[in-house]
Length: 406
Image (cartoon, rainbow, N blue to C red; front, top):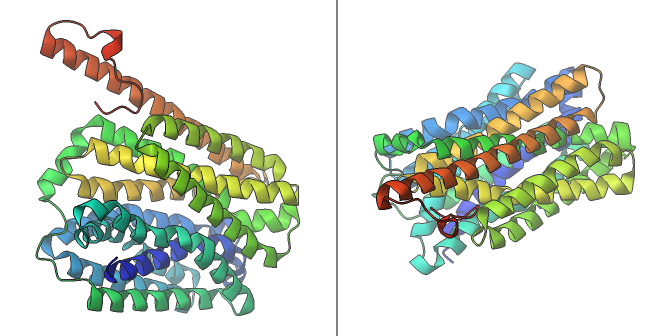
């Protein structure tokens, strides 16, 4: 594999670390600024909203530059955002730094995937893209626990300085190793926007918002839940974030293997499992062993939703997938923001640190309902199309099954 893929993977590692690190830093950040835990949770909420806004805006901007130029710009903004977060003299500036860093997230993964595919022969493109995205999953096993450890050994600001240093390393790698591309980062903006006329694209993004968003209702407040409810020592949060990350890696591997064979059944299984595990976490959070197992399962089922959710959008927007792909990453983060905000509300209402688990479970059940509706609508549309094209009703044998391309 080309060394340029390593630069992309390092960038993905840094972005994954800055996104998820807050779940282990939240109590220290709240104490440092003298704010409540729910208010400190805006460090997650506003980051996610920054991805929602930044993904389409930066992707549209990318149509005017080469892919290498855009990756260089995105890594520069990433460094600035994390330095601003670490150096922030007050809570408001810290949130501003989080938003700046978030603006790079969606476009980096969207454009980086295109660059990764171009670096290798056609038969190796999937492996190249997978290598780049491995940085994101490894971040949850190594980067997030390491960030929590740095916070406990020094302070939470040190974590963001270290993440900025990762950004510098990725930037140097992009400049030195990624070849210059004359191609633009996306198709014409009109073509990219046209795919959103397909209602299935919107339904797929709604599944993403509700499905993966449910994960963040729980994990945003994981450190507080584990120390205040379960009775873990603050130092144990490092281990728990690693357990969550290992679950994510496992869910990604299993789901990635089966999504191409049966996309919608895989999504049904992942969403059902996630809803059940999040509901159970309300009870298992009172036991250390039960909580640890549940955290791993949340990571497993949560990330098992990602391949089918992303593939669903790509399939429905196949004619111009760049903006839709970045938009779905924005949808993931809008769900994260919504879940973190709702979780903060139920905690502030006095329902306790386990209450966000029910928020996550209900969001996931809603995502499952949208998935079932979208599949039914797809089958009905396909049936009507066949009647118009052939002049006779389609037989039962002709009907596509859930997850089958139509």
